[in-house]
Amino acid sequence: MEDALVDKSVDKEFPVFSPGLEGVIAATSSICDLSDTGDILYRGYSIQDLAKNATYEEVAYLLLLGKLPNRKELKKFTSELARKRALPDGVASIIHKLPKNSHPMDVLRTGVSLLGLYDGKHQETSKEANLERAKNLIAQVPVLLTDFYRYARVLKSIGADKTLNNAENLLYMLTGKHPNDLSAKVFNVSMILYAEHELNASTFSARVTASTLTDIYSTITSAIGTLRGPLHGGANEAVAKMLLEIGDVSKAEAWVRAALSRKQRVMGFGHRIHRTAEDPRSAIIKRYARELGENTGKTKWYDICTAIEDEMHKQKNLYPNLDLYTAVVYLLMGIPIELYTPIFVCSRLAGWSAHVIEQQENNRLIRPRSIYTGPKNLQYLQLDERS
Image (tube, rainbow, N blue to C red; front, side, top):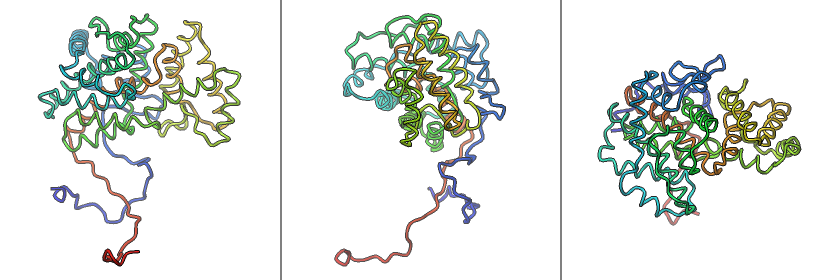
């Protein structure tokens, strides 16, 4: 079967090797444009406009269906997501048998697989089926996350509130309190900013898996496993730990210098794509981090970050990425650090699903080549002749 899929036109002389596939064009896509103007576009819409004006539901609809919804469409979509939040019978009972010290990312990886098992039509891969499954995941994964988190800490279980939107409900189920308007707005913005970012590692992983024409639950499981790594989604957790270690703005500059002298990576800075200018998402969340800090009277974390940012620009000419000031926002909201990357998952589900649908609509199996660097023409020795 695989031989039949080999592209006979591939040149035997390999092109220049690009470590990490840097600069390699692996797909065409109408979902996200990392614009040369310094903006990020979702389906042609500026991330600046979306963060300022939209709800996460509007952005999810845009990514999945290719257009912003009108009022009637948004109401229907939002209501549908709210109705889908209940976990299938059996999933919660299995999740409650997992070790209580499991990292929530590992629980989500297992939980999404379980959701697939309990979906009797999970193997369908038509666009309509994938859209339906995507909505299921966007609605259910936040419930899966908060249900396990509260169970593992022997906290009272909290059911989803169907009157709240996705961002509000996730905060409510985590904290047990309905968020105030500012917290709900800022958390909604963070989810929009994390919703999509072209062919990052986890999205590429999802598209590779989708290219085999497998089901959407398998593709999202692949993406979650990829996001688990500290160089991708885990960066926001590392930033929060860094801020807690520094502890005071007066110590920030010296901490950065000491870390750089040890060749230690300072998390929250640098990006494969956003190298010569600030990540536009960082500029957005930075404004909200400042507003939230001033509103709560707790500006310490924001002040530490600005001091780190100034020193990193002075020492390395590096700009912050989305993770730096998002950690400030989540710390101010009292969100446990181990939940930062799972919240990334809840946000990115819309983007991942959009890429899965796009990949399978015009599919070609993703099968790159490698340049062999091992030995050749070795002589086989019988077992007794080997040293």
